[in-house]
Image (cartoon, rainbow, N blue to C red):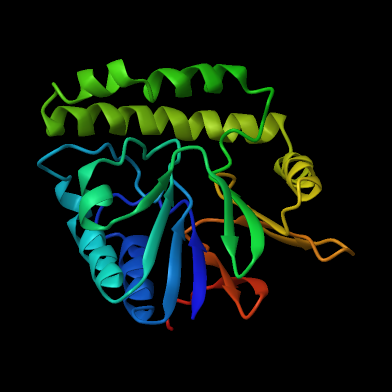
Length: 241
């Protein structure tokens, strides 16, 4: 059995190519995966309501449910587009939710997993916004809105976020931030550090056998990480597979 790590699918519409390919990939993994780690921004927007889910995401939720029923454990690290996951993930999928990531253990190895949106200490504006968006008062207010209104507001916000992401990538070099981030956790005893968020696939091994993986995305790259028999790899799912 193996463990799989995926991030940054930014799913919107079941008719989209990346959505269809992710469903195909997940269906091919039934009964083969010990733990599925979803490292944030799997959805373009998600906030959990008590008695409803967003209709475009029903196919993915059903695929995750089937994986869970066939023995796969699901761990979800919240991203900057999907947080306050809510009852479906907690009760139906029995999902372990890590709002900020953290250290997990696989076969005796300490692994640090995160979405990656907190890696840059200089992005203070985003950190302030993140605290507001994840606050309990805002969650309470969002539940007063009809889901269709919340969806429309979130779609506007996600377009602004995409533009901001492009501008930040021009100011800050992701590889350097990832190296600095990984080094701190290696010093704390982690064998591997795995993140999403930057949409940059990266696999780097140190002479001491420490592993840094940036997952890339599931928009056009279809990249994901695998841990199997003590070995980490960064792989790509071909649409023809």
